[in-house]
Image 1 (cartoon, helix red, strand yellow):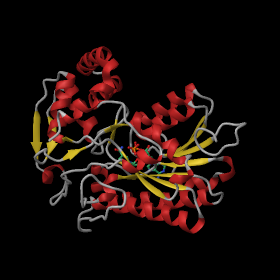
Image 2: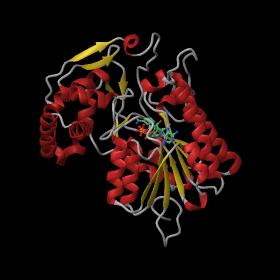
Image 3: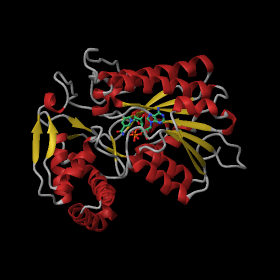
Length: 372
Ligand SMILES: NC(=O)c1ccc[n+]([C@@H]2O[C@H](COP(=O)([O-])OP(=O)(O)OC[C@H]3O[C@@H](n4cnc5c(N)ncnc54)[C@H](O)[C@@H]3O)[C@@H](O)[C@H]2O)c1
């Protein structure tokens, strides 16, 4: 078996990645290219990130086995020949709390329609497909840590923030139905908070927002009382497990949590960012109704149970949260080119170089030290 999908051994696997120009997709593209695969990306760069075309150009310069098709999934995929691919990672989606709250129609239509097109395409040749889902599918969460087979409870349809969770839940239903009815080798990855270099804060992602504020010496805006906790996993750990899931027939027709188990409160995360970057910034608390809309519902705790993925393919994240903060700071500062940002990032990079040898040993101390 090839290292990614089911290509005959004499040629590299031909991988299609929707949303491959995005945060997780660009890291996955690089990993698969490093392993000798051919990668085709379909991305419309809709998330409005100026950096994405630059990232994909940089990847393209390094590999002739990389091709990018700019366009919507739903209009591009039907023009492709399913015989040209061995497997699909479907990552394209409307993502980010702010985007979801402000553009619910776009969110629902993108997440449901594009996934339906991808599944129909994969079903033409029973091609292995990985569908990116989210811990948001757990809704309000009936217990902690969250297990893949838990019941789900959502808030009222009057609050658009739940449309992301519901649209991703429909994606899961669809993929599981294709598996049951047509034997499609589909696997679902339920990502918990994934963080790392190349993530941007404009659409509500907390860590890049905090790192940018800390580099600028601005206040770090914590929503609510900051006692809500999350588990953050570095994208470079996350992408390593995806090829294992898509290549393992025992994983088809199943849902897998992917993330880190150590929780940290958002207030503690803000303090950790400030300390790690030696920033003069302060923490400022902002009520949810000012940050979003009145009645915004947030979850107190979101923590994965990783028993299933460990049993199926093994999964032990290696990169500490402190290391992720440092690497993200260096990358954000190099994107910006601001003098103050460069200084703080250089400081982070120096500390990083001095401590990288014991990064993984630090992991649990770094995260649980800040946890509630
Ligand atoms: N980052 C996280 O913490 C996280 C957590 C849970 C789930 N996820 C899921 O992982 C996947 C990747 O997320 P990400 O964080 O890399 O986000 P991202 O926004 O960086 O990546 C999504 C990419 O999809 C592209 N895209 C959106 N709609 C498209 C369309 N109709 N046609 C073509 N391209 C389109 C965007 O331009 C973007 O490049 C998403 O499905 C998301 O729901 C991410």
